[in-house]
Image (cartoon, rainbow, N blue to C red; front, side, top):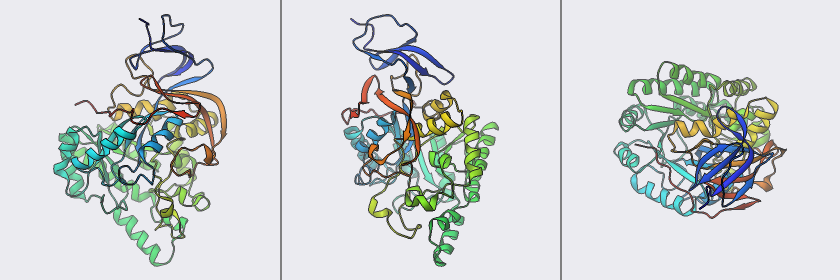
Length: 450
């Protein structure tokens, strides 16, 4: 009998604290040894000399739109794109699919689709919407990683935003379930009122849309959610934070004992409001991208370890919904899950000097720890052998032709990326190498421990 099913030899292994040359021994999909000069027999070996071995990326914020809207993206295309970018797990959002994941029946449909189509390991967010409080316990029992709510209108009739009572009452119940609530934090009255005024005046361009969702709308909503979290004891995570003040509110609340975290996205780190008009609908997001000052402040917070998670918020939509001159009417969302870590390696590591462990934590380790994803997020003994083997010396300009989305459109086309993914492994099994993918349906559901 061999000592290992697989050994990776001589790679530069990135942990949460350092980069060290080591061999990795893998058995039954688990890392069983991390050491230089590993001895013992192996059924298979991979030469990782001169390559960098990251923990597999974990994207906690994707909209793969299945079931019901597979023509927008779908789990097969979405998970292939992630694998090509060195990602091994993800958590799928409860909206944009039909039906949205807000009750036990809709969760069954989502899980069946993932079991059939997902190349990677996965978890699922449930939804908190008006009227579904009774479903929260059922969803938690079936293994959702947590719940998502909009503090503003999310643009879909079947996934409405929450009023303050629904938010407060739902947070009480989620706290009782020892789960977590994710919030899209924008003040509904502010963004709706400004949008209505702009549309009435015929001011419907890209810059008009950005102006209708000012930073104060995000800051106020974050402050309100934090107040409710502190009162109810609910674990809270604020998605796609676009402002320095928003991150600082979260950090200050955490320092005084509130169980809260937040994430930002690559588009807030790479673009500013000056870019939206030229980029067009591919850069339409809510909240919108901000000023140069905000962008630079977010980079500093990431480098300092205060801003701990970077997620893609991959949300493609259908091409026919993304055409038109009315920027308020066209479907928003940024496609980008394939390139998240490679963008950070180009702009953050190569040009700003952010170290590799910080990038690994923001795209893997911190995600797994925050959302209680078992045995994920580290290159360490006892963890799943979820690995991205990367040629860190390669940097290039991202082209549409290399994207694996159903629709090869992204605001990041034309941006510099770094770190060509040579191989992606999930539980020791190769899911991407040499431009080829593993079989769909091989992913496993990740359930937070009770």
